[in-house]
Length: 164
Image (cartoon, rainbow, N blue to C red; front, side):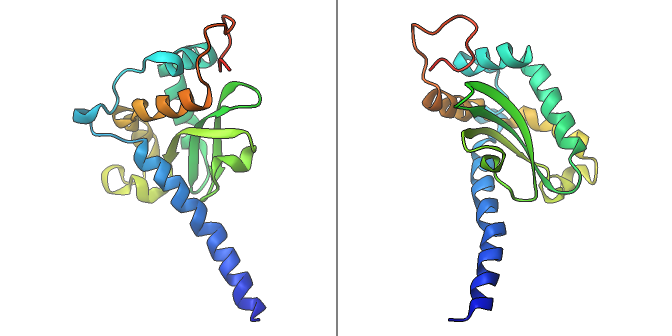
């Protein structure tokens, strides 16, 4: 067995495989305006965002600020922590997926802050890209994932963020 080759393949796949997963989520997170991109959020995810962050605008500002502050390439995520039953905003470097921040984290929105995601339109002005991406976020998809991971229960206590 060629162990050098095996190690090289492991290291390459360790980088490429998460990139595929992250981008698969990213493409589902986007929708043209004519197909609902950027439409106001409704339902249990909207309620959870208001509970945790105060408003959708506050969440967008937080994620945009954290994405702009990320050095180099990476991702900024809105996730649900199924164990703690709350929404979280996290950043990951390079191609690292959200689960590297915790095994109970499920991505709802992942925003690619690698330069390739925005350079043609925004040059090297990442904050402008992050300000405008909210116009095409597919909240319908994020809501579907949230409702699957945190199904609404009629007996959920007021103030609970993930009504499990």
